[in-house]
Length: 241
Image: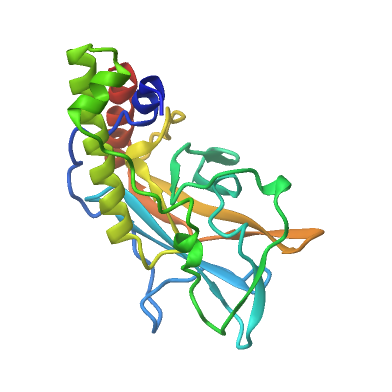
């Protein structure tokens, strides 16, 4: 991997965000999750880990029967949105889906798997291309990539260690999720509303059949504007380095 790619992909994480209440929790269900409305036989539940900047997202079979599901679509980053309620519509907040996907949905077959009644989908983490560890090499290897530029090699080594540490944290904390949204890796965000609490939701579009699709929505929940602004500040700071 070229150093320029390592640097551009790994501008990450100088520290944590302040801890707070973050999310207005609706009433929980017997299984501990608060599920949104059913679409295509599926439901989504989300929860916010504000300390680590993660939105945990879980999708389950909402029916009482075993059923098929499109295994490629579930957790695919191009079909997932984090949105906040604007004055007249829902506005996307660019963020990163974990685990990251490779390829394009339209170019892949409609992969079908079976899922038990009420089962939560977690096998997005078994796809081999997702779970390759982030490469952390020796300083000598980075010196080769930088043609002996010691400062650039040291910076690359430091950034890659932080990126690998973040990958390890997400893998550990999100192993029971269908996917997660990493707020510490978001790109530039749109202007947030004036209110202290921002109303947000997560959506996932998926194919119920090869020729038809539905969009699954989580319940809406409230996040403190100060928390989102802190995420935005960290993201902008990383882009300027």
